[in-house]
Each structure stands twice: as C-alpha cells, then as structure tokens.
Length: 182
Image 1 (cartoon, rainbow, N blue to C red):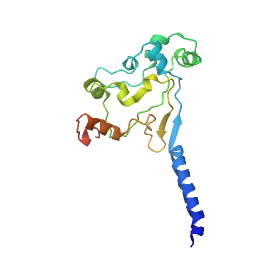
Image 2: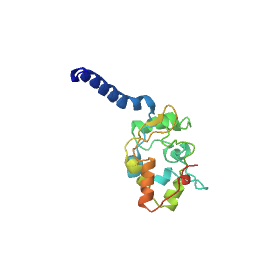
Image 3: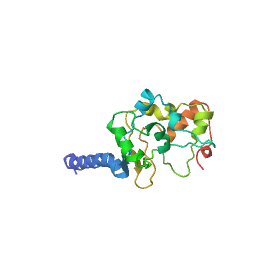
Image 4: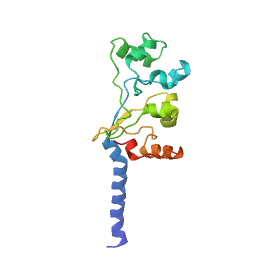
C-alpha cells in the first residue's frame, strides 16, 4: 500500500478519534440544571452571607451540605427583591412548602470517605481552597453524573484525587490510602 492509499485511512482514523474524544463525555454524562436560579454572589455581597451560614455542620461534625427549605425561608418567607428568580423560588418552593430537588455535585464511590469538618475545622482551610470562587458565582453550574456509576462529575475541575494528594504533600501530610478509602 502506498502513502497515497494510507491518507484516507489515517484521515478517517483521526476523524473517528476526534469524534470519540468530543462525543464520549456527552454520551457518558447526563447533565441536570439546578431547580433554582441561585446566585452565591447576591447572597454574599448584598446579604453578607458566609459559606457556613447556609452550609453548616451538625452536632456530630457531619457536613449538612445543601441548605434545607427551612433555612431559606428564614429570609425568604416573602420576596426580598424583585428578580424573576426569587419570585420563581417563592412561587414554586416556599409557598407550597416544597423542598427543591438539588442536583448533587459530590456523589463519590462508596469506598471514598471525605470529612469537611476535618478540613475546615481542624485543618482551618477556607472553603475557597477546594471550591474556588463558587461563593462569588452568579449562577450554579448544572449537576453532571456518570450515566453508568451515578457518580458526580467534577464540574469545577478542582476536586480530583490528584488535587487532594498534592495539597496534602504541600502541607506535609503524607497519609495512607486508607485515610480516605475504606
């Protein structure tokens, strides 16, 4: 076979690899928009809210994650502003007392154990260390999950095992695999 005969094959191979590289994530992950058009920026800048005002720890040190509707209605029993997003939130969730079904950003394999309390309370890390500037974002990213495993996709490109290992090494914390993996 001559070089001229290989060119269509190589071109086809390059196109197939490129399509697979671009198309596989689209096929593998399902994306779900968040139910509420929420702005961290408005809550932090205008209301002066801090991360732990809404994302708190339980008595046992466990991280409570996404705030419940009860936490939101402490301020939003009635509209505080004139935005369409807030009106939608009041009409769809507050008035009927219906909990928003938030998409999860952090579903990990069962053998992974992560303690927010150990990192925030004991390690004294700021939320931005791992989550970046999510607290100043104007909108929430869609939650993405692997269609096969159901595990969350890292939508912020910051929460990968390699990032955790690198941070531990920078801070002189050489741990065993079993510290994070059961």
